[in-house]
Image 1 (cartoon, rainbow, N blue to C red):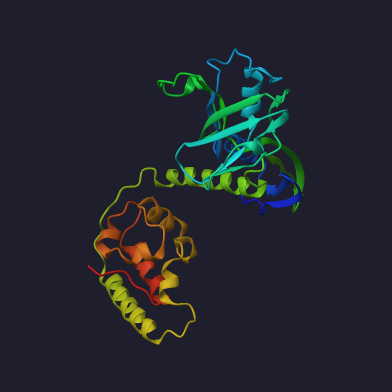
Image 2 (cartoon, rainbow, N blue to C red; image 1 turned 90 degrees about the vertical axis):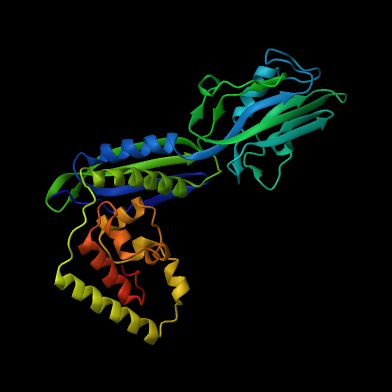
Length: 330
């Protein structure tokens, strides 16, 4: 029997870094889980980065700017290190305008309600003269992983604008190690240790949970391999049980003395219902995420959902009945 590992625990958390430990993984599952989580952490978490920049007086990246210590190539390398948080799915324009002798940092970028600069101390350029001026316009976009200029769709770039390779991933570093541990009489179980460092736009714990959630949702699809929606004839016993469940639900609604209101109950997610995981997976795959969405469906509609059938509909009715709710009859 393949046993489940223990729940992850944080054994150290400092700044933007944390160390997680997962004990009692079945032999060989340490590398299976560790490699999958690492790949998702580095490639599939959303972030934001500069994808293009326009510098006043500069036509291409192989240029220099009067009274600026760094050349344009070095400035672009600095721009790649700036980390952002965006509160929209659309590209954002941002600007920077400075004068005089000073060290220009990411904190000098003008932001809006949809944009936050996380790494405010990140250097951009150094102005070396009181007459120096630096004016820039940035294209900042949300995305996943790493996006080189060559991989993006070919678009007409505005004259004077320089395209920038974008590092979207909010995770800077991920390492994992595996060691043997004892579980009962066996000594070949795996202890999986994860070390995660982020850029500050997301905390390590949140990054770990998001990566795990992505993997769970991907593997849910496999649960329906070979299954087809079949409408089966409901037995008299099942019909009688459904009738009794409806009656019990009506009585429960009338006599409910619970403090939680019906409206609040219906906002709960399906995984808070005490029904089988296969039933939950089938409902979520059909776009039903909450109890409210479930009770809006008719019995005949539920029976047509792939992976469900009369028996599972009866299971749903029974659980909802205990909460004082019911789905629509045919």
